[in-house]
Image (cartoon, rainbow over all chains, first blue to last red; front, side, top):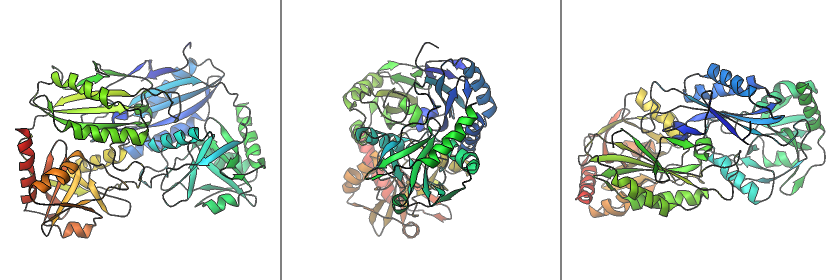
Length: 276
Length: 276
């Protein structure tokens, strides 16, 4: 691939999206951000399971088999050592107005860009601020990775303006939910805690892998619970997870800082073993 | 125009959207739905003022002058007696990820479809259900007509499934906010009430016209307030407003019905006078 980003629509290379498209009109769809290592899509099954959940919640026709087929086509064309693949599914075209048509034909859009970074190395500890915007309470959509992402866009603009790597986002009650593009973990008295995501937030693929595989592998269990700013203050270690950075230690959030990153390092080692 | 829907991008006819586009990726943009009568865009200034507010809230560069210019180009090509024009502004293309680029160039997308209905006649009284999904509390985005519209999509699917014209949507506290695609008005003891929209909902153009022009013209003032289901039960008349139906009387919501539509009719008459 010669370009810096290549795009496929329903399995064929493209530079444009046919209009109308309900993804473009209403954010009516879901997406995944998949890390690609030497042409291999890391944890593709975990991504496709979440995608499937999102399609069910939005009542978009199941197109997982087609998505899997198209991912295979695209994967062959990726020659970068590390790349990031975005897979979006929109409800396709449709009549004017909000009402979905009964015979919606989903569109599958895949775009790939190279990653300069070597994802075999854990990133340096991150500096964070607190996002001014709080996540909206919406139990109907909580957990899925849908295309309505204005909250993340606004929080990211703030993090960039403040010159930090990421931001902690709270819900409307002031509880801690996540970072902008990832999930949050706290270590307290040797226990691993992460926010419950019943009312907002995204059920991250790496969050799931930490809970189900990597934390148990180092002898820890993860408790999903309500977390407050007080819990953050009392944490001995803090890190976040997402599909591109896997787990990244946090050095500072606002005025508070951490030097200890042992649990994050141990989990990153578990991840590295999956690359062999 | 020969097709049933024609589309322009940045002033030129198109059938496709260049990728990537942040509207398509994240719903990163705003839109307006404008009623067109014999080539005239009704209340275009009111629409463009709300669009401008939305651009400010999202920190998308001001492109109102360009939008106005493109609307003029498109309006000339509309030969249907009644049409609906959708004007969308996205933040344009951009780097991978949520963070907006500093030099974003907004894209202006205009699509036009014919309306079969004669908008000089008030629509028959509507039947409504209550939407299962409640609107999320998000004061940062309340009022503007952004592209994150999954709540409206899901509520519209329910209304269609239940065979009703529209649905009442509540907020997370159970307060009445609006209908799916429009604002709600209650008549009680000769007074006109409409929900406050500080935490969710869209500041409709016709809502504004009812409040600022049409209600005063028939000797009524509108109070923006918190409204509960009890207020709805005690209402003597109920109607909703939006850009395509202007004001539409409500005959039934769930188990409750109304026969009196006098205020709605009087307001519709005021609207009709603007068409002359």
